[in-house]
Image (cartoon, rainbow, N blue to C red; front, side):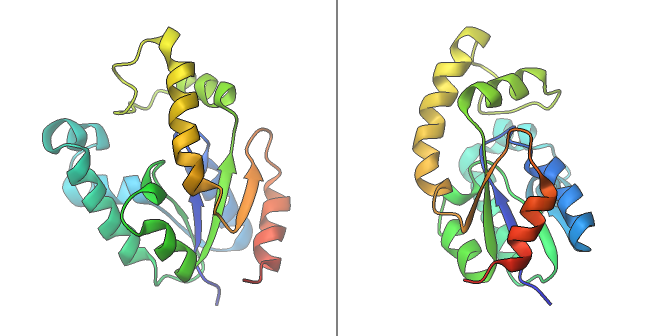
Length: 171
């Protein structure tokens, strides 16, 4: 049995999409922290942000990450801010393998602009301000993301390569 694999990275970096494919390739289960929170609360992430605020969401997110830390043979897609709050990153590092799916700000903005998902943190930011905002925000979060066990380039990802890195990873 293998420790869980936590996918971290900025919103729109493809953690959920890559996570589902990666889980199938590894023969693992797949979990998405945002989906679990929405299922638990009966609300979308946007509704939680709007009605209860970001702090309440981060508490729920931390609780879900703690509950997943003991899993085995599971790929877990986390929210973009998950490693930046509480002791989430160290918890993920101790209990599993962390993989940072790294994209540059231009790629992220392109994906976010094409996404049909409502993103609470950027919904009030105009399109012309999105790139500078994402660039600044990513710089702040990269301090956490860059501590991942594996850093994986998210543009044109080769998931076979990533699966191999995960299988051969030794802490």
